[in-house]
Image 1 (cartoon, helix red, strand yellow):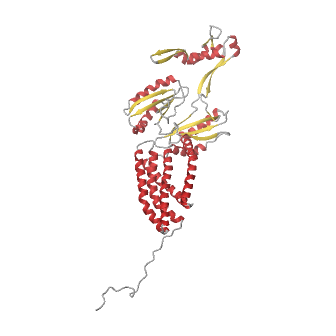
Image 2 (image 1 turned 90 degrees about the vertical axis):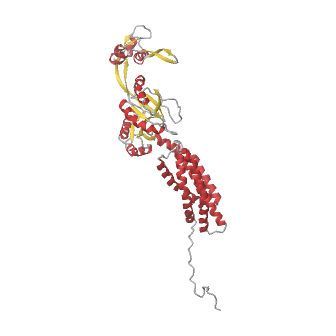
Length: 480
């Protein structure tokens, strides 16, 4: 997807005309199969993780189809400099479709003020934070959701003179709108398309803003028009904020950024956190982090209502199974060591630890608990058969080694088909690496922890006593 943001206040007609060059450039790439352009807003939600943008006259999005998804990063690297050079006044954002829940802006910083906060003060604070982001090499670009301020010409209506001329404020608004924005007076059907018929001044007159004083304004009760300058005191340019966003009824401006290719959002946030927190905030203003950080925190928090009861039930089952408290503690001490395999596998396959990887880690914990229960149960069986604690631990580990490793191998082989899938690869890699290392650690570490918790000592080997010559039987035949 290619998002193009022109400065706020740009006309949609100018944006539409300028995108022809971008479409031709993208279509000329042999790695591209097609491109669809949406002007003024994003496309319909044809893909669940895509969040369509709200309508903006200065916004357009190009959806690009490619032959091979493995070439997307190279295409983005080739087109980014071209867009920056060809559209110097715009903010082009080239990004690939997200896998699973995703955000358009990976890093967001929300600055909230009171309900009647001064927009100038909010923009000042946001400008300081944007300067911090722009100075960070790992940040690709920055923007805020209030966009740029827009300049407008404001006619100051004179009520006394307007009454003498029978011109109301509504007449004044109708005249300016008809002259510059235009009024739709009909529709023209071209096949299946309906083209609006707009009445407005010609382009040369619309560009001549200095002649607004002589713009004809027709009163509602008269057929004769009067110049606009006769019913206004002055026409002055003023800056205004076209977009003012609120969150929880508080005026809030959001600074947005994405990391450069090869850098994750948590890495960029960690690099910016101290510098952003050092920006002074006026009294009554707040600072919040959004983007991927907020989405990840919400997703992880949604797991807590189910995870906490699950852990409690598992602990009760294990305690009830062994009728003791030490076996659950042994299992609990074994599970964290699976992180060795999880971390190594994620680094080898270059896969980030996302939400699905977290789910894989939770399922991996259940598999390791199952292996530990099998081994502990075998130890109890050996003890019931009269074996010493030391011999019971050794014999159980040796007898359960093959079943545990075979179960781990079948699970690992079962998730291998998920590796090429860009959605499930995180879960597959987590289960594979964690289970391979975790199974080995279970068979080695759990017996050691069992011996520590139950204070099992290694039996000492007693050397055989030295026997005397009389005790040694003679092997020579007796004399005749």
